[in-house]
Image 1: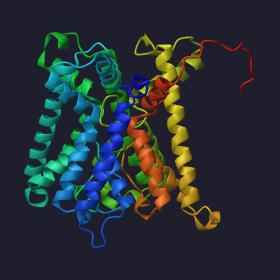
Image 2 (image 1 turned 135 degrees about the horizontal axis):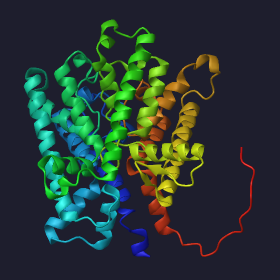
Image 3 (image 1 turned 90 degrees about the vertical axis):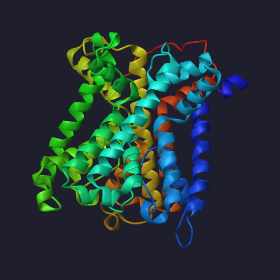
Image 4 (image 1 turned 60 degrees about the horizontal axis):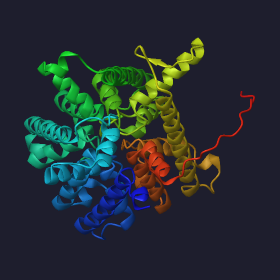
Length: 446
């Protein structure tokens, strides 16, 4: 019974929850607001940091002092790498070995490969992450030494790589919407953080020409890179034309494709913005909802249903139209178990977002006629998608939500970060296997 309820799939959920509670206590204690930080706001901010989302109910710059910012930075880093990853690394360095169940759990969470060597991978992963974040911080500091300072450069580099989206400025990064240098650095950090540790590791091996790299990128890595590139650049083009048709909010901003590209990149669960989201067209917001829903890649700091899930679902639709019995992606058939997981994840994510949108509609004006709340449904759908996909972009509604609304988004961020598949797997560990089958029958569909 103990092994059943404390399995490696349940422990991460407990670890994340405990970290959020401790973080909320620390944030409440380090707040510099005159009246103090409300507990619901402390809980919301801690969840947003650990789940590397970036949604806020209070201004990060003014609500916390330097101590509070260090607490946020620690929570973001823990959430980005994963509490379980840190725990496994410490356990490995301490005992020089990890139990088989922990090894399998971490392998399925990060690489979907239970046979990899946990210790070597974790050490290489942490070293790689720290190097990327350090170089990003140095680059940011070199670009804006007076505005950012050493701590600001480090904070935004870690926040960008972990796809957290927390900024030390009330307008996020809007002041640098015309700065190519700042945009490029932040976009590179976001992209690397959203590709996944395994994909980055493979790219490094290929560039170094090692024995593993000579064979080239693996099948999953190629699929991740191609899908990510298509979504990023395709989304940028669509957002560009959507804003041009809408007249744009600041005239000359969209004369450069850089602003559209940044918004497309940040929709991959980063949360930074160089444009005023609330002033964008509904077409752009719908495109951004789709990009946020997909998110990044498996084993990364990003959220969403993941690029591989989208690729599998698209391949399924293509196979249905072509009348094929197999779902083929990049010349290989997708296993039925992977296909079932993709549909389960898509269905769970969609239902979670729609349910949260319904709860927000009820708690934030459910007793008002439609003529008085026009536009709210789009705002709530946008915020709910942003929370579930751990993006952090907002139309400005989140700070004005009621306690019920804030708790709803808090639960959604937690669910989105842990992942519906992980939660479903944890529940399956607690259930008994059914050893009988029901008789099958035909049912008219459509």
